[in-house]
Length: 151
Image 1: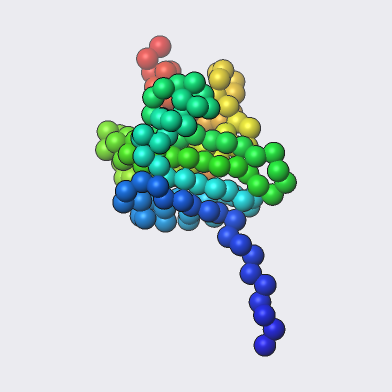
Image 2: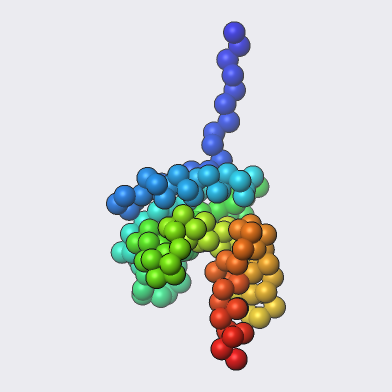
C-alpha cells in the first residue's frame, strides 16, 4: 500500500491559558471553515496579551484580540485571543463563550485580511464582512449599531 501524503493542518492553535482546551476546539473548527490559508491562533492570559499590546501597539492594557498579518503566499497570519477577556465579555454580554470566541476570531481574521474600522466607511465594510463570516453582527457591527442608537 503506498504511503499517503498528509498535508499539515493549516490551522494551528496554541493554548497558553488555563482551561483552554474547549476554547481551542471551538476556534479550530471555526477557522477550518473560514480560512484556506495557514493560520496560527494563540489563546493567552490577560497578562500575556497586555504585554503584546504594549509591545506592538503601545497600549499598556489587556485587549481581547490582536492580529498579526503575514505577507506570505498561503499564510494568513497570527491571531492572539485573551481567553480571560473572552470569558468576561461573554458573561457580560449574556452569550455563550463559543459565540464570543468565534466573534473574536472573525474580527482577527478580517484584520489579517486587511480590513480596518478606523473610519465610518471602513467600519461598515468590516461589519459586513463579519456578518458574512458569522451570519450575524460581529464586533464592529455591534459597535456601529450601538453608536447609531446613541445619536
